[in-house]
Image (tube, rainbow, N blue to C red; front, side, top):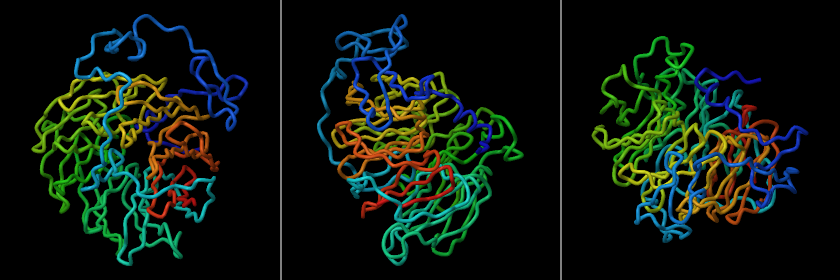
Length: 457
């Protein structure tokens, strides 16, 4: 059994089980809703409980009204797009964000048939982070990822040397976050020893390290011990600087100099597990364990805050119209305008700790600890939902054909078409909390709780 630190014990402990008393997976959806995974998981519909007074989601309200604070209210006229898809947009590929909050769309196409492991590497401890794909000096595609034992490795993902370790070093703490890579090939990753590391992968060398916050000792029990953990990001902005969560959020140059820290009063800083999103407008958006979604200007001043009232450990993602999507521990996913006002919210049955994936037509794919994968339109209406047999901590990832890939704590990796049809599922020996990385050649690279990084084709 894996022993999680205090802050991730809280992070992983709230259950939204989809397993019935007889041990068979159930769909907690209205009886009229088709349980489309029945052929795979033996999932059968279960009638939803009678609704409570008030509303829990926009669909509970009539017409173009929306649900805000359990009450149906009139929507802003400019948001009266109920059921209408936004105009398709070409994804911006001019720069690459370094974290799961908004990576560029995958160029590769995943396997049509159920894949097999082309290679696997035992890294010795839990792999929670999504692998970062880069190119080494020989032009090979390499997947870089850290583990809960502090090992940071680079594994060749494609070609005749696939499965070979080419980068291997140790940092001083557990790694939860996805590494960022700059245009020079240098990698940046945070760890639970309150430190951000810059890594030269070709030499397997730490170039510099920067301790963030003032938390001593670094791994004290309880929330205070987690406050300075550097696991929120880092995100590489279009300006070339790094944005990373720890005790609040830092802007740091790729040379290791701190540009600013928010909030300036360190005594009021709460832990930020969410990976910051840097929008095209230059806002730095993130959730915190203070119960707020916060947006900062590029100079570190506060632009706006939206009160959620629950921990916000999910990472923000940007919609094609500039909307900001972010999930929280109360099971809600919020759609916010760039000015921080609420457009709509969607309610799942348990914590949302992952980032959403946004398709070119604006379709939103969302996973939850309730074990479901949801497809929503840009107005928050449900296209379809698919249940798995376990909680989903991993973020959905889209390939070039917008097929959705997501792992679950039912030990399975799923490929789902945009129409909601399960293309295939593959069983793993253990939980899959790592999000998938897809190479240009179509290899699926994914980590799991057994400490192995696998390439599937």
